[in-house]
Image (tube, rainbow, N blue to C red; front, side):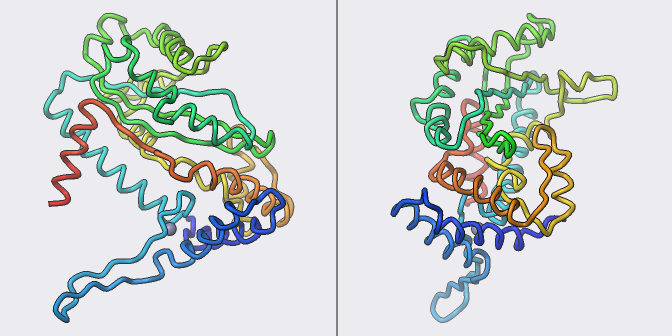
Length: 311
Ligand SMILES: [Zn+2]
């Protein structure tokens, strides 16, 4: 079990070490100072609201920092609930819809290029917006929900960026193509290449979402809606991508066996250096980041649900 309060303390310690980092300029120094203050207060202060001498509401103050483990967990859970409710209502209203999950990637980038690459992908005039407006995409997609995610490659000292996309498509999309995912994959990849304005074919993964998944289904080509919802509502970086806690042996072991990461952490100093490397770049890159967005029927339904909850 991850102790989120402990991980938050590790994050604050990293911010403090970064104050002395030679690359930190005056502006970044001020952000870090503010972040230390805000994260230290996160969920520690109870704000009491009163009217005419009577307590009407109490709430805990949160820092809302992109990397704060406590806030990130809360955000993920809230997002997950909203999107799940949205998808359930859409499904009830139109059982003929089908869904796919796509992962759009780009080549790994070094830390210095992270901000710019995120902007190129995720910005208002970024590749994703061009991609989703392509006529081939618009003609099949009825609604979408997306998340941008960054993984840290501690070994290669760079970052892997990708976009998770859950899309509602017309039933005919699968009828015509007879579920030929491979062919679709190439088509999606070409469209993503065009949107990125690059000269290589980027890696794209496409999975059909099975409404009722059975054991026989090919795991390479299919997934359940629940798994897809978790993927698109996740935070932009997982804890193992920026907080290496030397005292958490269970997580260190996981890191040692974790896919491409496979890093062996031998000393406390090494764990702090790795944490500071990731926090330095991610804290900066995630400032003001629009992690999630939606379009079409998913956007409409989501707005409806959020409005209903407010009232
Ligand atoms: Zn927080």
